[in-house]
Structure formats: structure tokens, C-alpha cells
Amino acid sequence: MNKPVQAIDTHSVMFITKRPEVIMVEGKGSWITDNNGKRYLDFLQGWAVNCLGHSNLGIVSALNTQAKKLINSSPAFYNEPMIGLSNLLTGNSCFDKVFFASSGAEANEGAIKLARKWGQLNKNGAFEIITFDHSFHGRTLATMSASGKPGWDTMFAPQVPGFPKADLNDLESVKKLVTDKTVAVMIEPIQGEGGVIPATKEFMHALRKFTKENNILLIADEVQAGCGRTGTLFAYQHYGIEPDIMTLGKGIGGGVPLAALMATDAAACFVPGDQGGTYNGNPLMTAVGISVIEQLLAPGFLDSVKAKGELLKSELLKLSAEFNLEGERGEGLLRALMLGKDIGGKLVELARDQNPEGLLINSPRPNLLRFMPALNVSEDEIRKMANMLRELLKQTA
Ligand SMILES: *Cc1c(COP(=O)(O)O)cnc(C)c1O
Image 1: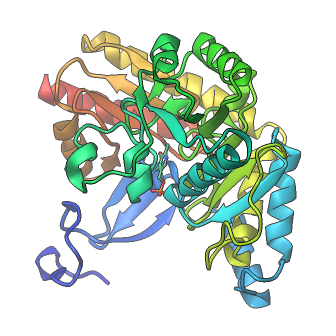
Image 2: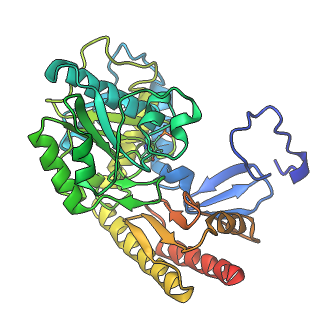
Image 3: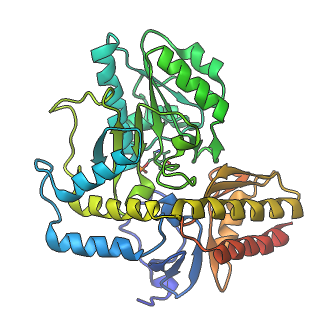
């Protein structure tokens, strides 16, 4: 597989993003290796997807065992892992029902449909879902319309209507948008793509109280912040509130395409014909989901995520002090370093391209870096990442 760099022929790969001229060939834990044998310390992990690192043994074993047994029964039948994972998720959350999908966007589409259906049944056809400026909910037409990403309102116009945008942590801005057509508010407990911006405790409490009093559903998009990422199994648990609907993606599959739409009994109003999808509840994927959730729930694991989050935080704060940056923010192992200037993109490239070992981080906004390592990253790897970043910051200072 050791092709020289210039021999990589990518002409048939649809060009949807600029990629470096290397091919990733294998991974183990927090490290990924390219076709030249160069290793990268991976603090991206497929955008917070590989929550247990590369080639996690539990996941590999779940895949092997299930692949030999039953890869796909068809969504017309129950299968064992589908039931097992549903029970595991409802048994460890405030939700009663689960529908599995293959991507976060698809789970959010399901949440949007569920809320609209609930509005038809309970609120005279109310269908508007208030979302937030700078939010990210996916790349289907409806979820792009729900997202508050600058420029996305015109990109594939016309948008799907019914997603007015409020300001995060500003209840008045939510209240102003409420009409008799409002059926739900959809929120990321921590805006991930928006730059790791947490909703405050006060805001979440006030929002939950307000939505309850006004018969409005609260939808938590935990595609990025859920599944142990913040140090609790689900991010809403930090706030002491209970949403009506939640979506999961990314981490729940530990690297395979799996997502979930969860709802309380009161909100779960789909009837046969409303929702489906060829891969929903696929046993191969849900078997992996069981391994992931069981590993997250192993005694001490989530506490170790919290502890490692604190270590990452303190390392980032040291860098901030040393280089006169603007601090850090986030929860658990979803954190951002505020750079104070627009050098994020440059640092990402320098970090990746340095030798002999690269570092993978990302910059969802030009003035910050985001870190979403495997939840089982070691303390040494966190310190090593900080030291690699320290050298880069020296170079760019
Ligand atoms: C990544 C993400 C999505 C979209 O998930 P896909 O699997 O890419 O469709 C939705 N919401 C949030 C908060 C995300 O971070």
C-alpha cells in the first residue's frame, strides 16, 4: 500500500472538500497512519465519531460476531441488537421510545417530522420549530434549513419553511418568535460546529420551563454532545432538565453509521406509515451501538471522561496564558481554545503536515481550535497534544 504521494489518483472521487494528498490506511486508539507510514495523533476522531478511538476491540468483536450471525433482517422484522440497544438507551435516559437511523441529519429529520405530527394531533397543525443562530443540524434540505449557519439560507434555495432562528442563551429572543404555529424548540446543548458554545444552565432551565408552560416540545440535538462526550451519558443530564425528544449520532456508532431518534411516550406519536428507512435498526450497526453504550456505562468510565476533560482544560488554559490567547470553553472532551485571531485554519494545516508525527485538530471558526479526542484518550496523549500545539504556537507567534 506504500504508494508514493504523487501516484494517488483521485479523479473519480467527487470533489466536495479539499483533502490532503495522503490516504489514511489504519488506526489504533488515538493514532491514525497514512499510506506513507506517517502517524497522526488524532484529536478529531472523525468529528467526535470514534468515541472509543480507532479499531476499538469491543466494536471489532461486536462487528465480527454479529456479521457471522445476521447482517440485515429487513426493517420489517425485529432483531436482537435493535431491541437490546433500544432498552439500553431508554433504561439510561428519560426517553421511552427509540427509532434508529444511519446519520445525525436523518435522526433530526425524524425529530422534525415527529414534532410536526405532534402539532397536527395536539396543536391545530402548529409546525414551526424555533432553532438557533449558529446551530448545526445536518445537511439534508430540512436540517440545513433548521441550521443557523451563515449562508445556508440561500445555498440551495428555497429553504424548507418553518425554522425561525433565536439567539442562544437569550430566552427573550425565543419568546419573540413564538406564535400559535410554534410546535417545538430544537437546541444543541453545546453548539459544536458553531464553535463549542454551551447553552447556560440558567437558559436551559428557563427554556424548559417556558416550553412546558406553553405546550411546546423541547428537542435536544445531541448528535455531537451526547454519548459520553461531555462526561455524562447525555448532555441534557448536566442541566437537570428533561427534553421531550433527543437525537443521537456520531459517537453512538463509534465509527459506523448509526443514529437514534428518542422520544417520551407523550411525544412518540408516529403511527405505521409515518416513519421508516431501509437501514433503520440494522442489526450490524445496533450491535456496535450496544458495545459502545456498554463501554461508556462501564464503572468509572464517564468519571474518567470528566477527569480527562479537566486535564485538557488545564492544558489549554496553560497554552492560553503562555501565548496570550483568549481562554478555552466546552464540557468534558468537547472543548475549544480561543485564539483571539484568525489563525485556526493555518494551525490545523501546520499541525497535520508537521513531521515526523502529525496532529489532527480542527477549526470550525477561524478564531478557535476544537478538540474532540477519543473518550478513552490517555493523559499522556492529552499532554503530548498540548506540547505539539505549544511548538506550533511558538512558530506562528
Ligand atoms: C454532525 C452533526 C449533525 C449531522 O450529523 P450527520 O451524521 O453528519 O448527518 C447534526 N447535528 C449536530 C449537532 C452535529 O454535530
